[in-house]
Image 1 (spheres, rainbow, N blue to C red):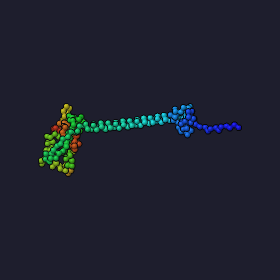
Image 2: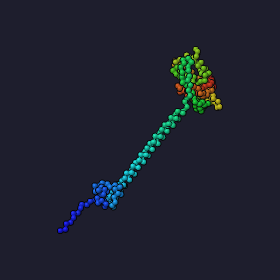
Image 3: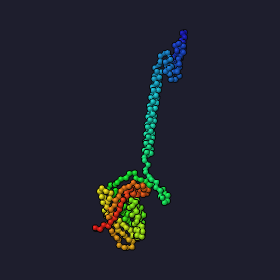
Image 4: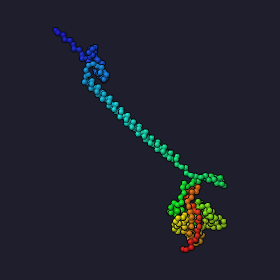
Length: 271
């Protein structure tokens, strides 16, 4: 009988020169991924499934590469924006510091008391103006008149200080005489009488000159039921705004440097 040769088990693709399966075939049989170099080295034909696996792997690598590129670009933009914001903030901070340091120091003067030796810091107005407008001029003229002509035992010191701050040296000396000697106002009135001042109308400014007329009424009121004494007056005032040194607390009383250069008061007879 004819004996048929047993069919050899299917083997991988053989190398035609050696008759042995090549590396690519053995890798395919084991289920390993086929390297492109293996496909190129293999002399035989490339199977369709091997080519498809290679192409799929290549596309996956391209997607991974593109994803990394996009991620790197986003990170680069974030870093650039953060650096720009930080740089802008630093520049603004530096600009503000330079601006603050370049501001001129407010002028001040050290004043020494010759009697006690105490040193005070006084400020000076940066600029001086002849007038701050009619409304402001009338306000300070009225304030000066009320401070100078009023009397109240409880508040006389405040009126005395304000009048001195708003008076030129010779005018302030005349005002101090009111509280000197036996006929000093505070000695006569003490805490028994008060002088109330009422402005009858806003001070009248004389155009072209720093002078004004102020009409006011004084009421001397006694606590012992004596009749009130009512009198009408007219004050002629010359004034200006001066750049004089002042303590900070004095600047609160007279911030603009208003100063009376001359002051004359006469009774108003025609009523």
